Length: 94
Image 1 (cartoon, rainbow, N blue to C red):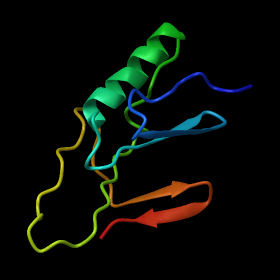
Image 2: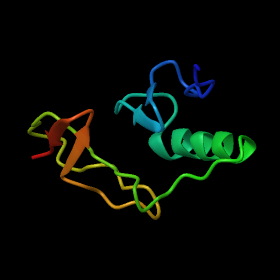
Image 3: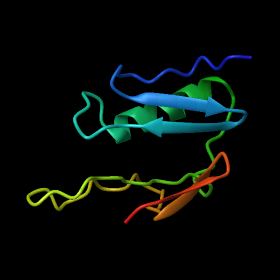
Image 4: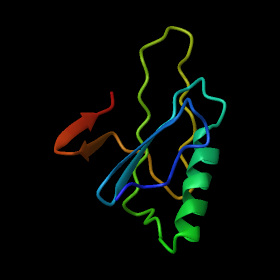
């Protein structure tokens, strides 16, 4: 069965595998992470589902840049992690 959850912006990517969804939002998108996550929360409510924020992870990847040292704020109620396991692959953030 295919999931009908689609990102609001064509610049953002939503990847669903079984009961996990990964949301990829680049820095230069027209729909920021908090808006995109809110869209996913609304979709879940309409489909009688719950997003468990205790299991939800926020990872912020960036390339080293001499001028851009600040990172976006993490989502409310979701902690920023330095590592996550995705389909058996461990992703690490420096």
